[in-house]
Length: 157
Image 1 (cartoon, rainbow, N blue to C red):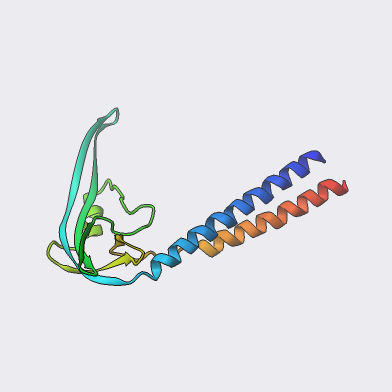
Image 2 (tube, rainbow, N blue to C red; image 1 turned 45 degrees about the vertical axis):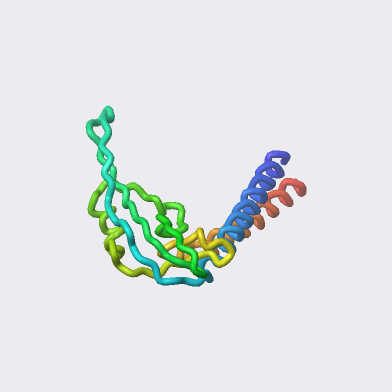
């Protein structure tokens, strides 16, 4: 019976962690989604290749390198951030995928630059689209309810 209480407590804590984590993440993403934008200019857009020797042979990775300039309230800024998603500095094993990531941003082109009004140095060319936040929060709530049921079962038995 102690095992059920321990198991239920773990499920409740895990569910609570998921709910808190996704709520904070969702709140941060909604802030970014409301950032204003200014017109900026793409300064550099290229793909950098890295070759390294591994036990399996030569491995090549490709990283999109992008920089852009923009101005907010008369002050000029430059940035390299495409977006604020975790894979925003993605490295690819296929050069075509890396090239496709920067294809919409050729050097010299105009682009919308979304910036943080509280700190204009923070900027991105793409707004994130929150994905699966509500599903993970729901999973956390279900885990907490299941954990509470398991604890109750452990107490009753």
